[in-house]
Length: 461
Ligand code: GLN
Image (cartoon, rainbow, N blue to C red; front, top):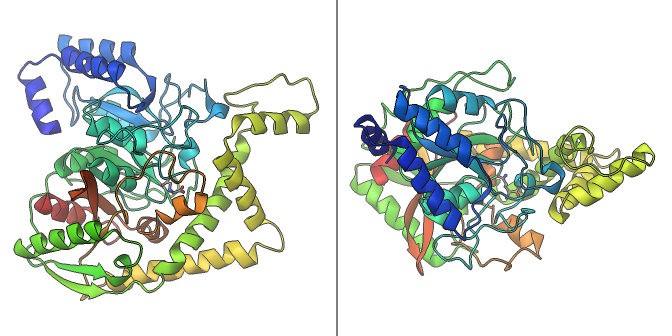
């Protein structure tokens, strides 16, 4: 899709017309996919392109950015009251790279507040709606990015994935979403929720587009100490097919709690891949059932520490500071954070407190190692080359259906969080429908083997 857009632009189509067509769609939309638009700046940039087109992998291509990724001069509020009005003075590394390759930023997308959620309902701007059924959630936390791409309000978008936040909304909105290997994409300029788990990645209409965006954003960055070198060339290597590959089907990802229509769609996808020359075998990831508990302890612990910086003095929301420091600090945080963020700060602080640290946080870290070893074993030489699973156990649920019951929301992440704990790459690609709602197939690879993940996803697509 992006290739076609680029070809159109290279053949002389007007970038300004492309961008203004997007904005007329966005401005009429009821999806609430964006919380900040950069209409004037994007149109101006498109006019500049039309006057003297530049080169680059994404030359003239419009892109939407999740509201947790810092953009110089464009409000970056993480869908939180506490950051409303905050305009970063610098670009995240991924934004610098997009700009170097010629992309045009059109706006910031709605998300769960500070990326804490699975439905985009915890945003202080209200929920984003699923383009397939406006009564349903788009998934989360990058729900605005996914809805925008699925509805044609952006040709591609960036999201971030701490425990499924790219793959879940990709699955619920019927598009492609890639969570790269931990360390492949710089997190510099991403507002941290749980920094040992999260990665920035693309949400796109095709696997080829995801590879192209990954080529732009992946690579070493000295400003992120966890950043690794990238082999690059993902787009160029996408055509290899799956002939001769062995797919592992983890038994723990099927059965109780999984919608039978989702299971059927995933098995149909496995048959299709078999028809394309792959073989498959059952594998086991025995610690899967501890993943949710370990994930939420680690994520909340990191969140409680990362969010300490929002004191109302350095960023965003300000209240009159005429009282003592503790009262001012507490008042601002009480007014600025929503209930889910507060819940997580409290639980995370508890898990890290003296006396409980060993019982919860340290234990969770040990479980994390066991989960990582599960993946390494299943994906070792002689084992499977890739794993295939459902992305989500069910299709998009109704807005309001789960938000009052946090545990039922957390449980929806059962097949996405283990991947972040292990740090491996995974993609969600559409694999059918259940009652008119899209279903996602998750393809998981070895550390830094995005090439194989993308190749298999492309062969399936
Ligand atoms: N739903 C998960 C959570 O709430 C994952 C969110 C994410 O990946 N940012 O933590």
